[in-house]
Image (cartoon, rainbow over all chains, first blue to last red; front, side):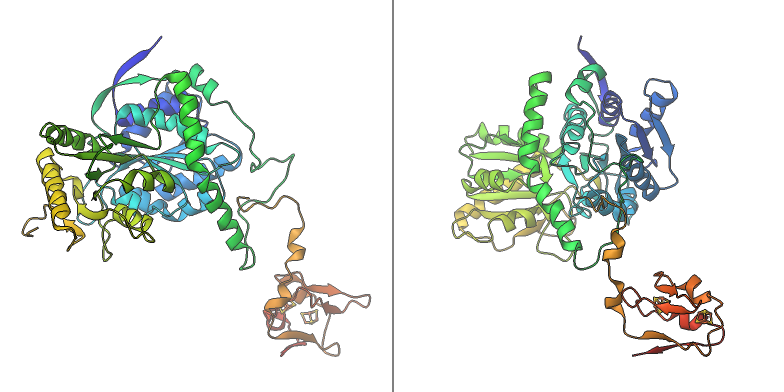
Length: 395
Length: 80
Ligand code: SF4
Ligand code: SF4
């Protein structure tokens, strides 16, 4: 029987965690993530989920607690946003280097100051090189399913890397959508409990969280680099298995009208849905524009990204984060680096937009696309990074 | 993988002596066998010989000088 509920993404995530039969949840509430763990604490209190719920005194403690629980073999979950993620920063690296299959949900929110609870991707981008697998989703259903896929991916013996699922604060976290809830018995068939080599067990004593000096640290770090390179293929497999069982798949990225696109808009998260409306309007007028929405953002599936981007004349990269003092936004930097050694490559324009929860409208996206077509006519880019829509600034 | 050590006792392979600049030298004529140096040495590098005197294991002594600092009769000097 299929159960379809009207859920905001926060609840969709909580329902997924419940179906994954998680053992330990540790969290600290922070807007716009709070509802995830609030719902989970309800499930635990009502006896619907047999898990230990730790109301930690900070996000640093919350992630540390799940690190400990994961180290003894528990299936664990935590969730956060913004300042909370920043407070976890130290432990993010510990979790990935210890190769613990932790799953975390992140309702993306801007970083202070000014104090603002609304969405942009600055929080995760400040932690993008922490060795975690990072997925950005664009609907409540995708968030729900991605949490389930994340455990399958993270717990694979050839991966063992923590995973976070990112979704736009408020825009997704608090917006109700119809969600097909995957039931626990079915999920558990997809997600059987498997033994891991890195578990603290008195019968198989090991030392975890060791110290290493210059003669070994680099090799430990490289093992994580190596595991991450296996993630794109592993996620494809995990996604295919998911499709067999639940009849839906998401891939490593989403493409829309990309085939003959001269301008390729690249955007992550909920903004990509708005972009589809903009593209529909322009396509009806014969404008050759398409969309590429990265789902797997870390590690970057380098080959498939390059292949997808090579055919376009201009890549219009919309960053929902600022690369302070840098050449452009973080996504732009990643994409520019993909072509560092190519003579023939698309021109790349970077739009910084949607900062601090400001709407990015269909009209604005059409404007960005039109600006990108002007670049094709001109044949060069004079200003790669455009702070789009800042009041008082002419673009 | 994952910064894990699979068997116990591997720290003996970590020859901390490579960090040493100054080495402790015990003057037996001053030593009163109180064993405070043995208690305080963070590396367990102080051994006790048949006569009850202390003897430094220079494979692991990292030269921190804690023993010399703690020794009541100042029987230990740090030499380069
Ligand atoms: S110098 Fe430090 S390591 Fe060496 S014997 Fe003395 S206390 Fe131990
Ligand atoms: S602390 Fe000094 S006196 Fe005491 S045992 Fe050690 S060397 Fe001898």
